[in-house]
Length: 196
Image (cartoon, rainbow, N blue to C red; front, top):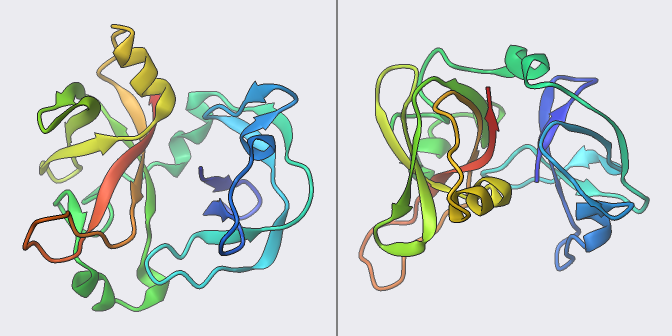
């Protein structure tokens, strides 16, 4: 779960204290599941969590989350970054070595993009999961895992999702697949889908 702080125009990813977890209270407010484009007041600590690869992470503070309103898709178009590669390169992952070549102030693990031609397909390696296929701003083909639970639920129910969407792309922490000799990589995921 992440969003743009409307007072700073910067991405923020609320995370619990190490060893903690996000409870239903922070995912559901007054019995309603949070939705993409909700405006939510989230109590956060003043400083960022010094996560090596996800500098947008902020530790949550005690307190109640509140829904303050809702935006329309058109309201967030100004936050889109469509003029180049998505999250550092034209691949479906970023190697930690690649990230470490830049100063941490240039690292980012969240990006909003507007895509005009996207398709969703089942993951051939795991039919329970979905993938999003599209091109970045420089024309590189991307095939990324889809983690947006609402979009996945819609696809499972046979609903079509339009070809023009806003996507929140998230960069996961370093991971190495089991039983593979590949190096650790930070994979890109489609964490949010908003149809236009």
